[in-house]
Image: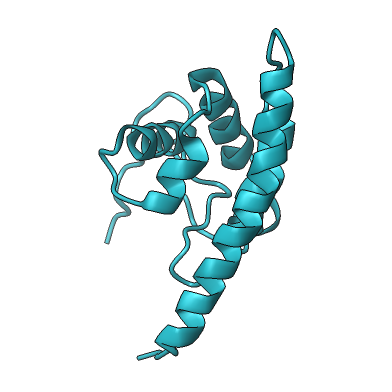
Length: 135
């Protein structure tokens, strides 16, 4: 079993939060300055990647999930649940509080298309499950 120093975990989490808040403030201020806000995805990606790693494939902490290669509908649902409070995570709730449904969908699509270190099962085209191998 792997062990880790809780003090180090707290320090890294606080560092991530500080970096995220430092990056989020200019993004939110810039969006408010525009009459018609454009898609924030390009501005949101660095914020996501500050904790979840490059392209969402290398989280900075073992407890942070890999986003790359996850199903888009799962990611979209999870982000909306963080925003509504159905999933209880203060850091994520703050990150998605002002993110539009369209941007959540775009972020989910982006991360779903990235190469992942995880194995993600996909059904063959046609939707039928493969027949079990004969013994």
